[in-house]
Image (tube, rainbow, N blue to C red; front, side, top):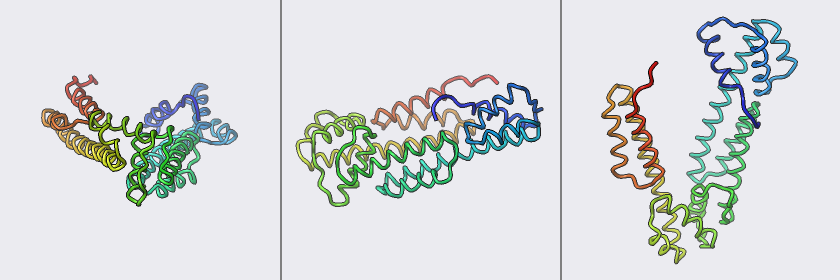
Length: 262
């Protein structure tokens, strides 16, 4: 589904009316909002028109629209997380099945579109795993994961020009020097070692950052801002991967910003 949705307005309305008991005034503007949102979550036109004839049924329509938005969001997020776990373990078939399970039950066009995009990428990565050929339309590091699984399954890594270019790009994002990268790319064994180093650095960086985020959030919520800041300072003291350094710096700046006035 392309274009903007009205979901932020629906969430706000549902919170006010359904959760907080605010008056529900079925104005022309409200009818237009609910009519658009109903279409965006794949509710039938006639059912929507019938529901908008009275306040009780319009409120029930709002509840159903909000439910479809919430349930679809949770389902897609959960499926993506599980598909990522399967993908990173080399189980591309399992990752694809997770997204197919979403598509078997999802009716909201936007969530279906996102699930289809994810599934298409997973199919592409499975092809990389099966053939060893690089796909320029896929994420670099995810392709390295597929190639790493391929090597673990006994296939030789073929140091083609495409693979060398992929390793050069990803090595730089993992803060590996150009000199070391070029030296490694002189042989298939070196390329395989380089691939393992890139993936290892990102795995370690992600784990370190997420662990620090958990501790930071707990300390911040308990009122210990200095302790929360220290978690990100500890990350920055050892982190070399630029992406995770930026993320830690952003978190630290957020902790140093004055709180928003309520």
